[in-house]
Image 1 (tube, rainbow over the protein chains, first blue to last red):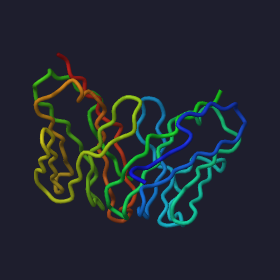
Image 2 (image 1 turned 90 degrees about the vertical axis):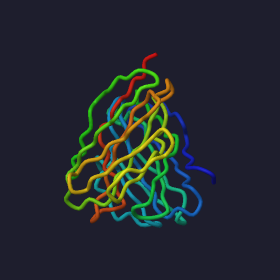
Image 3 (image 1 turned 90 degrees about the horizontal axis):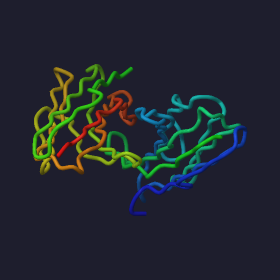
Length: 113
Length: 111
């Protein structure tokens, strides 16, 4: 597509429920990234994909977080047993490859109540 | 890790010039990005410097000195719509797919 597309744009969920966030990168972009940004804070790296593999998962904050990418395109970030501290905007970005400019989606705003 | 430091906030007058500085650890450095982020929106790409010097794009310019671990973003002829957070992000040579972001500089443009 023309830009990075994320869904849902907004999600309110109850503590303890699981959520799935979807990212559709720019067509042809092999690299895909997930970042998290809490209110008033900087961007926190979560995970990076090159194709379908994730060479760096070091940013995932706990084992409740997981991500996958299929067909070298769409990625899903899953948060199990959500906690209130998971409330943040989850930003997906893609690029043509290592070291290239990354372009962000509009984000999925998650609120855990 | 890659420590990216930039001022927390700056205020300037419409029509003026503002310079946002960014410093980083030079070890393994492979490039520096600047992004603009309006409140409640996703970051948008402004510039990418990988070589020393000044890159100019209209009202915005970005400068890099690799030996000093220093960059700045220069905003000229400030407009009210330039009020936003400006994020500096470094790329590590050994890890060149991962951008490490600074906390951002909030610029407020006053009439």
